[in-house]
Length: 492
Image (cartoon, rainbow, N blue to C red; front, side, top):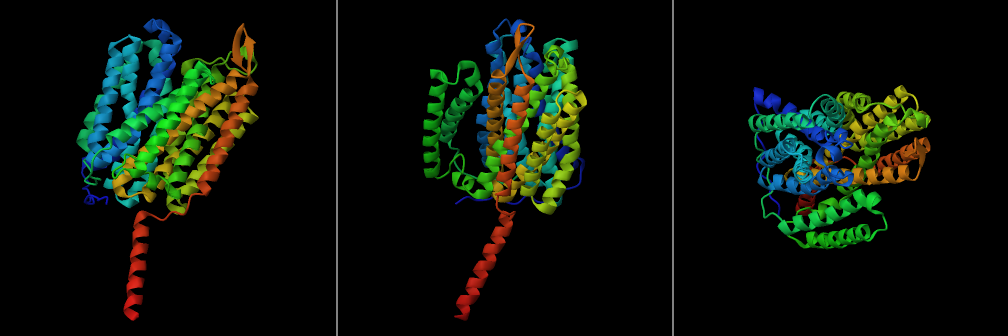
């Protein structure tokens, strides 16, 4: 039977205690910045690295695959061996990857370095678990909401920052900057964050981790490369078959292992399972906003709808969304406290759908593009802030990091699927502009409609999640039930 470590004693009010939340939020923002800084480089990297565009695309794919595999694995390791210890390790790997990118122009080294940076995807679930263990309930909701919002904040800040560095300095400078920030993050966590005593002792499921890695890599590789390799190609179909077979075998084994990597019985509970479904759908809906907005505003003016903006100007168009996420995270916490996180999640998904309705109504004027993208970001803030709160209320304290790791994994799968679906829609709706194929406005509008429909599905999934009873409430209710039963037996 799982054992829960001792509850963390109340912390003091010293400088380190006050800096715990800001330090963890900084690390979450830095993680998101690391994932986006390479985007402005992609058009020029084939020339800079003397490689093909297909090889360069692996700098994004490698990070995605590594993050998807390592997030649940590191979450489980954090629950077992110490969350701060594993968090520090993930930040070290992220920083090492950035240093390697700064030192090399070889595409093989760059891809390997970006895979190391994928470990940073576990920063947010590990940090949320630390916040649950270290903060009193009164501060926990707002801190978790802020931590969840760092994903969007960092992405919004990373793109214009990277674009300006690429435009005005050597591209290696960008990675030296992120290396310095990563080292600062490691030092700050070591100083300001203490190790949580809440653990789930046991033996790490190495076979389960390897099986999950093979299944997820096969699945996400097929999804992310299907458009380039051909959805009906033997490679893609083979990868899908391998993923289905391996994940089915992995699921069967996890149910029969005494100490599994992922507690599937916990996942099968409606409160947890439906939260994961909502995370997948929300990740799909959110990611389409960044993908489509960047392409639409950079489209040539000759298309009749494009604005012909530079990469720097494109990043600045997304910046208001990041600021909005920062401002609305406290509101999300207040709504969750008064109405429950499932209502916040449903509201956020509905707001995302409204944002796409704005995009469909007008995607020609710059100010309307910014308004629509910002509305989507606002909905994403509400939804992403509510998801970890739902998980915190539904799982035992000693399984917080692994459960949130699975939730982040579902968001990652949603984003990968969104990327493939948007690409498929735009590829099938193109016209020639200056002799080159360019997506039509109709294609973009279809992508918006698809993402809006998925957001509505996320809203429906959120509303089907059972009520917000916490594990503590459940234990108290069981205690009252046992007490009533004992009294009845004594009366008999």
